[in-house]
Length: 410
Image 1 (cartoon, rainbow, N blue to C red):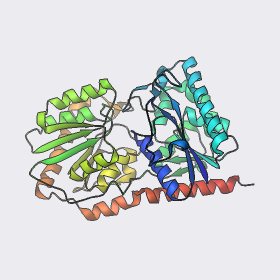
Image 2 (tube, rainbow, N blue to C red):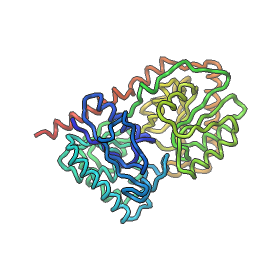
Image 3 (spheres, rainbow, N blue to C red):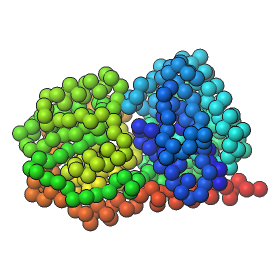
Image 4 (cartoon, rainbow, N blue to C red):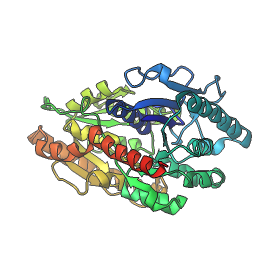
């Protein structure tokens, strides 16, 4: 089967970027022919180990095809980006035309049997307009639903085309409900398939322990991800034997806010910058506790990766998280209940002090457990991570492809 993969932002650095890479890798392993069309920075190149460069087309931003930065599906991206909500009509028209041109080139050059796009947003709608007779699947990563709220005029314009997509993949049950209620897409079109982790990179080894408990956060270094909350909670227990590792990136303003807070922890906080899979997995195998205090997530793939590396987990009890961890497991997983939020990814100021105290108590409890038993419960790790290997996830996605092709065959 010839599959055209389309994503409007960089096919790397974020959860959806890593997701599309894994889909392409697994698709190739299963004998399919793949082609990638993506938005990208002026100097971006994808690794040829993912897909050959003669099988890619990019809409280049930052002064090449377009003279502005990539509009991100999140308002804070791990690279220079712009906001859809701040783009005027002329800029949006130029944006659409750039993707229309490259989609036309991809269709003429590759002649796909099926199109798999990412995000229920502008470029997926454009692809549906331009390839009306080619079966099309779109994966929703959650962030696109937020764009429908922040950009209602764009949402109204593209909704009819999104509703004509043949199949939608939601990452969780809760996400499926949001797609139906917010976009009025036929629930019969929506399949629930989570993301996964690459077992070649993410696997466990015995945890080293020299008396210091290694804590790890990996993701965007930003307030919506809860990083300031995490850092402030650690001030409250700074006397305990821990070291926090921060891995990731964000725009300069958000990153500097977080790193200035991290400076108050001195040598107890280390910033690693953005890490590739090899470096991140190495760090995870050494870490005892992985912490994701995010206020908004679709399905956080990084939790699956951390668990596969044998990390104990502390994370906010968001709906997507419940798809991975149904309940607390006192020795391995702690779910932190959030208060009512002021916006989709921001708590009320009045709740911040109590949130910091609750998080610090949970971290302290798991630090104490690690001091007594540094090695994780490997039975729990194996049982709960095995379901999320990319090999198994892709077989489910391939099932959606097959179902769709059967329906569209004459």
